[in-house]
Image (cartoon, rainbow over the protein chains, first blue to last red):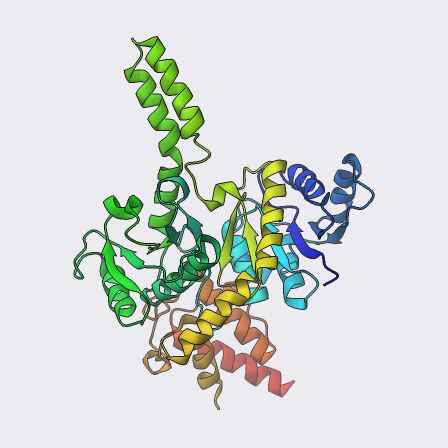
Length: 341
Length: 81
């Protein structure tokens, strides 16, 4: 590395691709410590890039990809049928050492599958997971998985706990994070079959596992790492992100007949509880990292516009600099020595 | 090592199940292999044996035995050539 972090950007993925992706990449490339490789259909990207004003010191390049994933195509088929699509080429650049991080605002599944197949997982990891801090209401709590694995096997919860612990230590400065399993009751016997089996694995893992936690305790701060499958995590994440704006509407409605008080409440929400603050790392940094891949893979909402794209690329760069992959790798090695993965 | 043993090793490694439970009669559902596991196994087998498994053939596999039989026949064909 020449001091710059090299980010391979899937320029064809996202609701507003390639226009907003290219714009965002150009914004991110204004900083001197990053090199951006826009991966996609070269002729289209050349035109898009020409429409944007590049500063003289921008390090932004185009890498051609001969295939494009269509909306109705199964992401799983990417591996076999479209190994030369933009996200797959970007993933291969990590594997070959031509890039340090991959960013995509396209299909999360396609990015995850490309990363799994073409970059590979860290030893001990079965599938990558999305980790995010709960921010405002529970600043010392992270949740895993926020949506990468809709269906999980029990052993995955252990790797989620390890990834969440690394996140809590690295980004929240919590030296010995308390881990809990999200369930329908605090007793060991509560939950579905997968959760029940995961409880036993976590209990015997040697990790700082404090048992089950119920939905009502998610924001209590009792646990620093809450593990759940990606289906539950994603539903909760979106519900959580919506609380601020819905609460404001509800309170204002209640105070309809009291305009001065209503104005005060509006101000209070604006100053103290803006909706953007009641959110996770996923929002603040324009996306989330897929933890468990042997390289930094950053994904963002498909609807992201240029500023969020730029933030996400910046965040991918910071993750490379922070060495998050190596941190997780060394935790997994320590854990693997006990033969528990 | 037979073709069957090699394919079993690949499937066990990808799905993280004990290979002793994978019999020729085991369905992918029984060994808790999801669609990504199956595609990863197909890709790994293609790379290991230097063959290509068309989607229309892969879709016919009802169980592990069907998968192995197909790979065995393709490997035998390749050896003849």
